[in-house]
Amino acid sequence: MGVTLTSVTTAEDLDAVRALCWDYRKTLIDNDPIDLQITETFYPVPKYRALMDRLAAEHARPKGIILLARDAEGRPAGCGMSHALEPQTSEIKRVFVPETHRRRGIAAHLCTALVDQARADGFARVVLDTSTHLPAAKHLYDKLGFTRRGPYQPIPEDVLPHLLFFEKSLT
Image 1 (cartoon, helix red, strand yellow):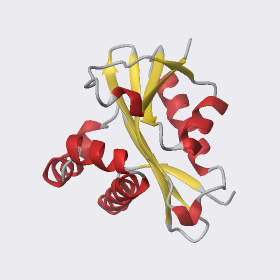
Image 2 (cartoon, one colour):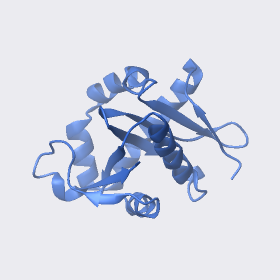
Image 3 (cartoon, helix red, strand yellow):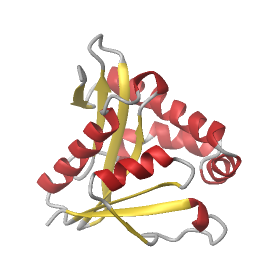
């Protein structure tokens, strides 16, 4: 695969992850009109900018982590992060691989590392959600042994048909 994963600890790596997160947001906006509406509703630019400013704190060790994938040339090839949602539940957020690096198993590598870290950190389960308009993500989470479930936090009724929720037991 020629990809390395590192826990983000430097300003340079955090900047690379933020750039990937902005690319992820743009990918969602460009993906489908519904994803555009959901993204603009839940993460308008000012709110997303504020999230990016506090990204390191939101996913800080010891109960969270931010991972950066780099290709063999050292270029950012993807990211993913997790944080404690509840004492026994870790939530995976913003797993993203740019188009130039897709179909190389990077997203699976990121997710597996996030699950392994959550298990090592003592969590009993991992949850995540994705858009119904991202078939590759649905396939990935199914392949990695996540099971589909209902929403794990309050979601507006009009958005529910456009999201899928997943869980993986770590015990």
